[in-house]
Length: 243
Image (cartoon, rainbow, N blue to C red):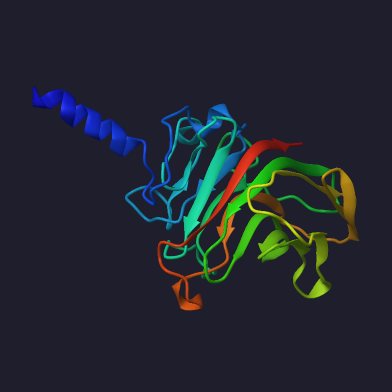
């Protein structure tokens, strides 16, 4: 007689995220987004390869983590979540649940030149949560061999393109959390272009090597910035296409 109750409790537990948000058990993210040319970095360090964990193909084709990388309740988007107390990659003090572009369905990592052929990332996404104290989240990047070349960044309500010392480009001064937007980043033939909701916002002549796209949630805060370890950033991606 006790067994059905135990099973029911286990199912209820499986429908709840670690932070208490309801979540319906659903299909893996790879059935929503084409992840064939991506590697996933998580803000945890377990027995899996990588420090922090890295999920590569073919495992990424069926992988899901209810705390950091999973389908949303409607099954039409993928949630990327990184808590402020999460593990970080070498050279960064901030945690991420983020995809990294690969050259193909193997261990070769993408590394292209902005002076070469065209490379393009198209997305439909929404930033759905920022940390309580430092409300900063990065949702997409071009990284070169040494550092980030540009970031799509939200700070409070300001959504913009960050280019380090080159200067920022505003996309939306009054962004509301959870509102989906379309983003297209194109690089090649010596120019980077960025479209926000089909409007060209940036046309930047630049030459860099060793480049690759990143997409997901790169939370720009940690406990040293005053945020609790379980405070987090979150991004939902509804469409993700590489060309």
